[in-house]
Length: 163
Length: 266
Image (tube, rainbow over all chains, first blue to last red; front, side, top):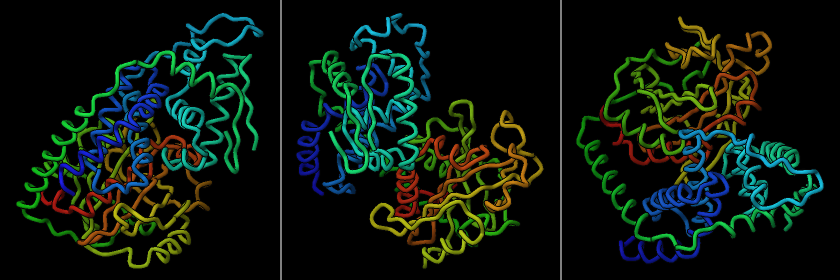
């Protein structure tokens, strides 16, 4: 593949997809600056692999690299779990966005990734499993654990799973 | 939102999107950042491959899959890290995280590079084994044989570029001089394991049980095996704890299978 063709295609992909990838990264790492750095690193890997990645799988590949970058980052830079910072809120008070952010930060990294991929990206279980390299059953059980944790911290949040 | 088999609804998705939208930076990402980074990485990769191609290719021979039988074991590590190991490390670290100094073992079954690191207080071992011998001529038959031997799972996949690949999971236990009965010991020192059939797990001290997830990819010069191994007592726990996704294992194996010159000198 010629370099100018690769860069033209890559630039088009980047313009269309990078914002969504940065949002996914943010949900996992909970920091926009870090999310941006990790997204750029992931997209650099996609750039290198560009000729080898089929057009119809580019977004899936990019998602996978972004999530891997995020999980690797969290392994290397373990943040304190901010459970002590959760708001002392009555059960019937409405959930606010800031509460959700804090509650998601309590989740283990892989569960955050699952929440991002399933709730933000609206991906099916099978695709999330493929991206994370885990079985569908593990995706479901980890989703349930994440929802249980979120329900615990955000009791007024409506979380319903129908199979 | 809806999917065929699994529906999620409620205000979590809405709230999540609101939270993201409310805090999202207004500035766009700069396209040239990954392009510059990517060019740099591509150029570095080309230089490494050129160096590998110029080096003497070390012939390896023997069976493809370590632990083909219960009595088989991997060669003891030589403690001889080298440039090829560094190149293997560079392929693994993006998905595995920072790795320890590798050990390199030239044994009758080929060359094995072994790395390790910790995630959530648990040691993960990663092995990359190359073999000059073929071994995936009939991957379906391969899976049939290993399942008969008591593997947890075995499936035939397509690796990068359409190469034939096998993804398999098996239980092993340390049989070398250093027992694996203490997770705090770190990676088992002498790196010698034997396969444990599923039916035999009950007879093994749970502290000595390891689960290994492994991909095999055919190459022009033989087969490449890449695996991750954990000291956990059951396969479900292992599956939830593996650090490197199967797709990444396949990518690493595929890269080494496609460019065996990367391993040309160590």
